[in-house]
Amino acid sequence: MTANELRQLFINFFIERGHKHIPSASLIPENDPSVLFTTAGMHPLVPYLLGERHPLGKRLVDCQKCLRTDDIDEVGNTTHLTFFEMLGNWSLGDYFKKESIGFSHEFLTKYLKIPQDKISVTCFAGDDDAPRDDEAADAWRELGYPDERIYFYPKKENWWGPAGQTGPCGPDTEIFYDTGAEKCGPDCQPSCSCGKYVEIWNNVFMQYSKDDKGKFTLLSQKNVDTGLGFERTLCVMNNVASVFDTELFVPIIKKIEELTGTKYAEPNVRAHRIIADHLRAATFVLGDDKGVSPSNTDQGYILRRLIRRAYRYLTQLGAPDRSMSVIARIVIENYKDIYPELERNQEFVIKQLDREEELFGRTLESGMKIATKELDFVQNGKLAAAKAFKLYDTYGFPLEFTQELAAERGITIDIDGFHRLYAEHQEKSRVGAQQKFKGGLADNSEETTKLHTAAHLLQAALRRVLGDSVFQKGSNITAERLRFDFSFDRRVEPDELAKVECIVNDAIALGIPVGCAEMSVQDAKAAGAIGIFDDKYGDNVKVYTIGDYSKEICGGPHAANTADLIRFKIKKEESIAAGVRRIKAVIGDAAK
Ligand code: SER
Image (cartoon, rainbow, N blue to C red):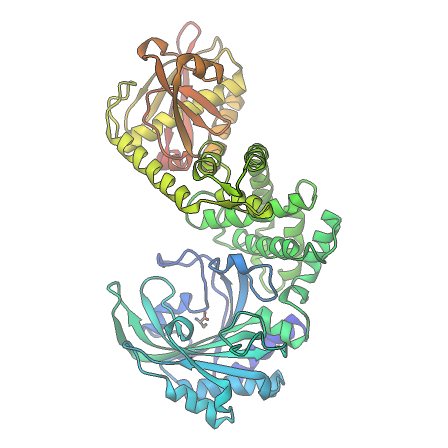
């Protein structure tokens, strides 16, 4: 069965049973601050689940693009994905458990022709919030499912939602396909993660709403929200070993084989799958009409993590530069008929992937060298928290990368210690931001603190573009803007200013932690720090380091991370004296 046949079969089945087909909504939820991405078909339907009238009626059917990263560590096995399509049928206060279970049974056994004895189901066991779901279990029994294949589980397994902290939710009944594999032990059952049982469909009986105090109240309308995992079902229908062996992934994996010169076989299977999954997901996020760019916050951050993780595996397997965008083209080609937005936004997708590759390549190269060196020195199989934190804090090397490199060598990391240091660092920069320093910042509001960090980045960028003759002559920061005076003996050309802006914005986009260390003036100089106010300081100075962008003697305070600056924009460049130029710049919303 092809992917398209499966989509169509499902949608037609429900249309024939009185449902109206609704198109997939965007992956970026609208007006729903409770989640970053559409994680299930229910998101776009929340108002209607809560009782609002849907213009197309009470029975709906769809195929929704979804993205979830809670299972990201499972990606690489046979069934888990971050991006996936979810086929769903909906009753908005219309039919309920019995009919919904009847539809699922009919579709699976009569239309997909899955033998009934390959199907096991699970129901909610009941607790203080809601009773045991005998109504659902009885519906299964009536259809001929024996008690041995009807399991009861608590909330953790058989309750769905709310998707964020609050909203519609309820008990569910989940449908599992038995792959026929041996039981992994006497207790092997659908809740087991050994892979024998694959969850393919979830019918949620949304009759409750959870509020921000954790209280469940009955909804005035009883809804059904079902989700049939598209990729998993396609895998079952074609009797292939994993979702990655379906037509949805085969061309992507072929391209990965070609680019890396490695086979989709052990020991590369997991890496190929992660690359394929993450880049398919990234392509859909970037290719959405509401597409976001990689950044350090919210959706952009998740996207960045997906891209960077894929990049790391690609690099490890020896793929050449720009492989990510080559793979994205395959994804677009594969899906453009069903999701035309991908083709519409193709240029954006490619550009963003190439740009992110370039930005990350730089951070990674230096971080990887240093991390490897640190790990080579580990004696007792443990990497101290301080070392891991330094990699993160001073070199901008992501913790999860250090973790993976360590795991490859059988080295463990003191993660609790890392988190303690991280919290201390946050606290220090918070306190720092509130104090007054002799370093010259009269007003230490959060805004001026960030502008101060922008001044360091600006000086570094000017020196990169205009050469080492550039030195700070003075600066003046208000909550609104930064004024920076520096030595230079001619007008700075617009294209040079654009380059400077670009360098600063790259550093912001990279989300580099701002590191601080105390040392003697000599040591600071020896470490290559710059600084013009030598006479203001005692013997020990603070040196602020921003990745490999900037190292400067300074009193502080500074932003904890360059990402806090959001964006940087030069407003004006002028001469104020012979050989001295002045730049005025803004950050944050004012720079957008
Ligand atoms: N909301 C349920 C799920 O995500 C069914 O669609 O599994």
